[in-house]
Image (cartoon, rainbow, N blue to C red; front, side, top):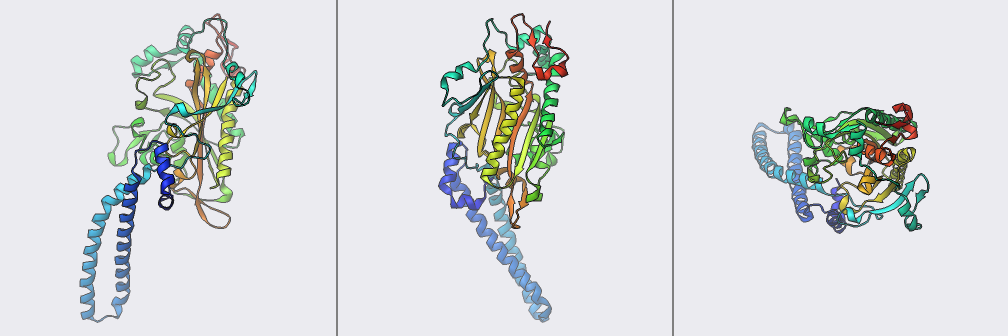
Length: 442
C-alpha cells in the first residue's frame, strides 16, 4: 500500500496510476474517509488527554470535587464510545480502500491497457546470443527454433514417449489435471536442483516455506484482496483463522520477516523458496485449456530480495534477478525474449516488471516462464518490514521477486525445442546427469 500522506500530497499522480493500472478505486472516496478518520481520531485523542489529566489531578482533589470529576469522566467515556462506534465503519472502509491503492509505476513502464502494450526489448538464442530489437530488428525472426520436419506439440510428444498423461490426470484430479512420468519426472527435479544450486552460489538463503498460509501473508504480498478468486481456500479450517494454499512461495518468504525491524547492515536479504504452488486460474477460463501450460498445481523455485529504500539499488536488483533467470534459460539453450510489462498488465503493487517468455514451437509463439518485479515499499508497508539506516532513521525495505524456474510449464519448451524428426527428444546438456541418457526415445 501507499503512504496516505503521499496520497494526499500527490493526488493527481495517484489518480493517474489508478487509471493506468485499471484499478477499481475512487480516490476521492478514500480521501474523504481519511479526513473523517483523522478528525475522529483527533477528538478521541483529545478526550483521552482530558482523562489522563484528570486522573493525575484526582489525588489532590476534595471528595466533593472528585464526585464532580467522576461524573465528567463518565460523560467523556460515553462520548468516546459514540465516537468509536462512528469510527469503526470508517476505519473498515478506509483500510479496504487504502489496500487497493496501487503503487506508482516507474518512468520506464509503458502505458497500456493489457498485454498488447507490453514491449519486447531483449531476445536470445544460443547461436546469436543477445539481440536488441531496436538495433537489429531483422535478427528477431532468427531467434525461434527452426525445424525441417512437421513438429509435434508437448502433449503428443509426452504421450508417444510416456512422459505426460493428461487424460488420466483429468480423470483423477479434474480439469487441468496431469501426470508426469519417467524422464519428465527426472527432468523436473533436475531443473529444481539446478535452480537451487544456482541460487546458493548467488548467496541466497534456501528455504522450503509453508504452502498453507494465513490471510495476513497473502494480504502482505498483495495477492489479497484483489486476487482472492485465484487462491484456494481450505474448507475445513476455522473461519477466524482461515488457511489458504499459496500460488507461489513469495507470500511465505515475505511473511518470514513480518513485523521485523532490521538494520541496514542486514540488507540486502536474499531468500529462495522451493514449493508446490496452487492456483484456481478462475480469471483464465477458456484460455490454454490443452496441455500443461496453464494448470492448477505446479512446482516453482522463487527468489525474493529485500533491499534498502533506494530506487537505484532496487532497480539494480531487478536486473540482477532477471539475469539469474536468463542464466537458467541460457544453460538450457532455450530461445527467449524479455518484455517490459505495461501498466494495464502489471499488478497493483508493481513499480516495474519484466516477463521472460520462452519459445514454444507448437504455439508458434513465446510463452511466459518467468516474472520479475520490483514493488518498492508497497509490500513492506503491508507487512511492516522496516530497517534502521546508518543515521538511525527507520524506513520500509524495498521488496522484489522473480521466478528462477517453474515446472512443468518449462517442460513444454524443452520437449518441443529439443524434439527430433524420429519423434525422440535430445536431453539438454545440463540435464543429462539427472536423466542419465542423451536421448529420450520410445
